[in-house]
Length: 469
Image (tube, rainbow, N blue to C red):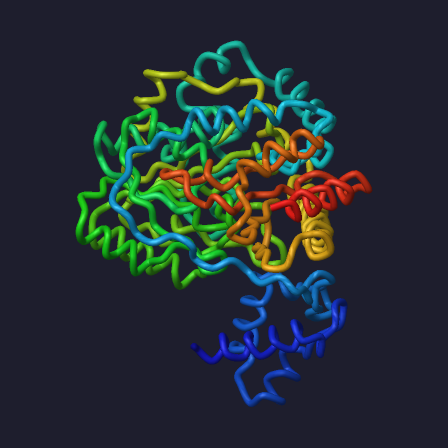
């Protein structure tokens, strides 16, 4: 272990043992540097790591504090899949059967893929829609259809610039949500029968895309904290004719894993060495906890190999279906392919989001959203600790609104899913996140809705159902 990792592990042990209690202030950077005989930069690295692990949080001008949910009995899951041969993907029927059952508004939405609409500034967006339409000329409605609304592309490019990425506007293609961006990207670089490296577990929609395009999945294990296994990825790239990678480098769905900046650089090094393009699915980029924005793999992309895909669906306007792809060397092909398919997302929706980004206080909204999601995560973690059986393991993501739960081996999450629905509680069972329908004893739970007494009762219900296995 590196020195900052050793120091972070020492602090984490003190937290888990209760020596540092929830809510307690940990030593300042200066105090820790002096007491432990290490440099301030080493302390900073350790504290950033502890933030990403969900154990501490920074408070402006006050220092670092132990999170309220940090001292828990439950461990994190391990890596539970081994490399396998490339697989045909056949999950759509299972996924559709699960998703169809989540439509009942009376069901507690632990299986939902979206945060609550209550967390979004929908009335302010409506005002932006009205103003954007007033300022939209009839000519612009037609002229901007293929390239995307210029004000929106300008605002997105500005946010890239603030993150340290100089991105020309003509590299941006506006799409109907990130899912279309990812679909177009795969179609640009693959043909039926090709191999695509994906995460395991993987977001079920990525599996459905591979199935629809008749592509084969090469599953790369994901560690719940460190992200994809780069050693296994390198071995697979060296052995197999992989045509593309589809990865979430930050807050991976469903595990919530985030690659460190160093590991993102190493990942990009592999892409360059083997000349393999990557679709970077980064729809949760704005939902980090703490004070440090993530750096995408796109930041390292000096040869245009990364198609960086984003969306406003998870952080601002789910119903507007506005996303984008920064396509690198593939931008012209992406633009042509989009023209051949859906032509354009809604111009009024693009105008509304462009106006909101410029005038609506987007960053203020994001801070409020992150604080709400962090509090809801703490509530769900605490409830799981109270109600779930011994041997249960949970992730502790540094952002987003999902927890990945690894139940004892005896639990069948598909059966649990059906039992829970009968009790008015939804969840997302593990097999829908696997090309081979693995992860049978795992599930994804969402804390994207405000926590209420009903949420607590739902966790208690799940605990009672788990006791029956």
